[in-house]
Length: 307
Image (cartoon, rainbow, N blue to C red; front, side, top):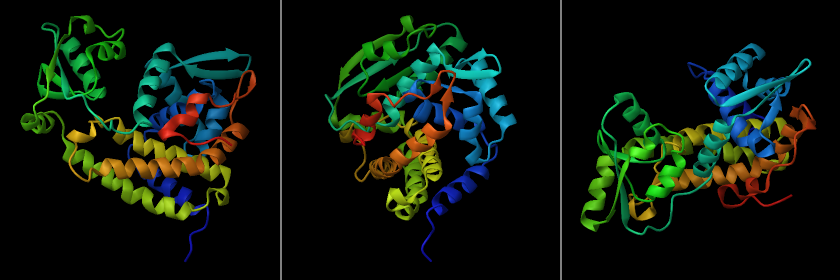
């Protein structure tokens, strides 16, 4: 039996709804990062409720989730009469910019064969823990509790990413030339690539049939295209933000992350335009319609093309 056009979206929503806990806030972060941020970064609460509805997330859960995101510093709210608008905070914009750079980018193809080592400052355990967490989020591998390593980020680039993080100015950086005989040992010590590879294989098994079923994106209703695009990025970002994006020379042969990236890239490009139509129809801000996507949006995944 040939699947109907809406079958991929229905299957993905059903799978998302079976997750426990549902993590509505995480999906709203995906919607903001992938869809709202490139179109002005602000949206009416009522519009966000309508955008979340196709995923089975009700109004009460949306309200609770955005309030928590605001409390955590991701969003800010503004009220005009009876209309509430949410926008990215300054901290939220910086976080989304960092995440966007990583989510839509492939692993580096080349490498200068130099490693950056970071030594955490002594003292406050909570501060050291927060710095370690931020460095791991940036893709650093942990060799020892106080020693982390990265093959691509320079000390200057790392400090830019850690701007405002307490204790970042006390980090000690070392730069070291790689050794072909020992590089693999550093990778094995710093990162669990086996677990990440398993996640990428599962992503491919899950979304490969979706890409086949979608076929010609013009046959997919705009609402369903928005569902597919959002859940595609939602699942991919959870993997790709854990990926240190090691240069190709440091990855095992046949790295499954490459296949997952190409699958995500192709399906995203096919449903992008129709999903934007749904976003334009349902998304509003206090000043009216959402603006057109910023130019950088069309460079995602190496280029989406223009309508």
